[in-house]
Length: 273
Image (cartoon, rainbow, N blue to C red):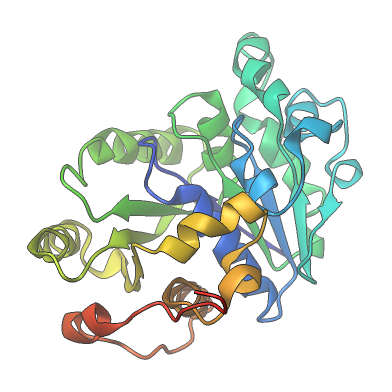
């Protein structure tokens, strides 16, 4: 049965969708059968995998309103073994339309239960909020990955997220666990990054992944081309780190680099640069 992992942080700009896309890709390359569910009305995971969100007719909106079966909205991607449940702007209205719906917190869970046996991993890219869409992601999930950017106020708002996770665990989904905390946008040349890493590790201890995602021009550019980092520049530092993250999620060993080694890593120039 597929393991369902929600990728959540109600704070925007944490690298949440970038991590959802690229973790899904490298798990698919493992090779595992992977489904990425775009539950964000901004549909960045959808466009980041090369689909035009404005052309999507059947989306996760229709799943939550129980107007379509999950299998009927799935889209192939450029990566073998990776399917996408796309989003579009229709999803913006889902929270309002579901307010009075019976069992509204479990709409996504019921849809995924019917298809999870066909996948090894189902990743859910939750929106940057703590509304009903995120609650659906948490109720459906076995575990949560929390991306935290290596910037000032990194832990701001996490108390509220952890409180929500605990509320869901205690009242709606007893099996929910924190899979891990992923540090993103790290610049190892700065003291701030080192201080944030230390602070997050003190707070979350063994839940923090050894893999740390660097601040990367390549990772920033890739979505504008509708490509995951593997297709855009598989030799980049960001690509290597997401490959490492997938190995950690699979319980496989990775090469551990210290801060000095990470600071010396550079993105290779692409042809023509």
